[in-house]
Image (cartoon, rainbow, N blue to C red; front, side, top):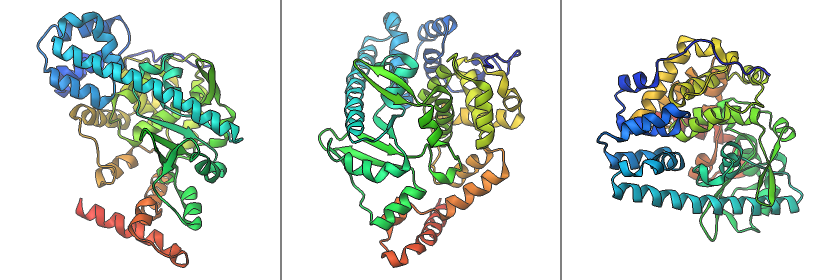
Length: 399
């Protein structure tokens, strides 16, 4: 396995990056709590010994979903935190513990039921990711369940999930459903008793992003994680890293928690960086992986692998990482149906053919929005790509 670190520094020290960005000491505190090593603990102590806007700290903690990381770092230093704000942080942490344990129990119940229906499903993100990366479901914040299945099983699983109390708000005709399974990637269910969200996925990303993940291979390479007396399957480290990087890019790294996960995962000694680089090249995602690794290095202090040094030293990668860093600091996420967002998605791809496929599929792939907006009879179903084209054009014109 190739796990060597890059021999020379790629970026400025973190304090210099934050000072130049003007992000503020409150954001600096979040980063220090999320980073690894003794130096981060010293930085936390240094930051909280000076005046802070603690209302802003709590708002940033909730937005970036890093309550466990911040609470874990501040607990030994609680005497530096105004009592009212530390109690508020502790209350949020306790709420997260209860919520995480409930979701973990619910995940085992759903997967056990699907297994009884002879359906193979993978736990993805959520409790499974917390166990993989942190060894404890309460040490990562999440608010839903994600289950990955084969596309051929979607219709059967959709019907099966009704039994454990999950409901789907959207209703399709058989033709619409076949088209959606072909062009979509997930169904969102709500639990009738708790209103909890469960996302049933058969792809990692919507097809118009032009990431052709090998879902069959992901199932073949799956590994097992254990929660109490239960065990379930989830993505292996290589597939998980690629999926997390693609997911973070899709959402323009709006939450620091995603970079925390990626930084943590890069320390897994089982990662075969040669295989990751090969698969990233096949997907046309080397630049996206490099931006993720560069951000994790800049913010979390993780060591970048040697295999991506060419891409991480590329000026375009550095420019994109800086642009994304400003988005994270400003706490102002992109509108994911805006021209700036589409331009960024294009710049993140290194191959022209992937950019062209992204635009083509984006413009002409109908989805739930089109089917909900206009109900066409089945004989007019081929007109939905035109509905998509005009709805998207109208939205972009008005933005």
